[in-house]
Length: 259
Ligand code: NAI
Image (cartoon, rainbow, N blue to C red; front, side, top):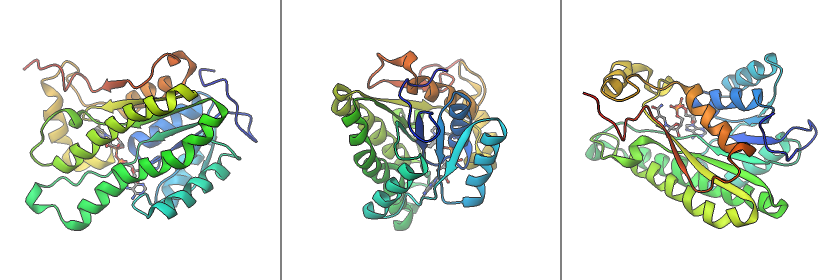
């Protein structure tokens, strides 16, 4: 088993909360972590999809539980969710993956006030509040791990996802700051930044994703499982000396251009 040596709770497995794990990269991360021996708390707004992910994990011999969340909710409601997630984990969380995000893909003049508020809330406020609610207990135990899911877009200007890219840059920077803040107390914090990856969020724009990746070293869109593998490594003891890193799983979209 490549998970941390810390063992959590009723299941005797280390426990992890993966936000936004009812679809896409989050669901793949839930499956990959469960296969590596973690008890995964799956969360999202859609209980039906969440239960589907739990069933998939259990059918493959893993352990998972579903706890519903709306990450655009108020800080107090987020803290309530944090308590529910600990309960769903059997009393303690050993790790946290900040994966959920929304990406309003419109130009700056067309972004509605509601979408502006939601993107800031889900992509920045929620990770901040959940870290504040959950990581101190890990630090008290002297052991834990957090992974932030960033984005290649945190590193480039983008003509129709400016706010999203800015929220991702904020998350990446929070990851570095949390590494400095909690690393000395045994909680490693790192970031995985995916490139253009085929998930439900961009299903309708498959051709755009293909075009974006065509001239890169990878030459194709990413797969959710490829991102999940990096998350699993960063939560494992194999990465014990990795703090405050950002690992690009992006086919070279930021650093290479072949055409
Ligand atoms: P997705 O839309 O399939 O998944 C996003 C997840 O966040 C979903 O489970 C959704 O339910 C959840 N979520 C959204 N709003 C929520 C809310 N208010 N409350 C609770 N949960 C909420 O997207 P995908 O592609 O799997 O994205 C996962 C992560 O990867 C995100 O952080 C995204 O920024 C990042 N990413 C994705 C890329 C891609 O090309 N798909 C590229 C770079 C980064």
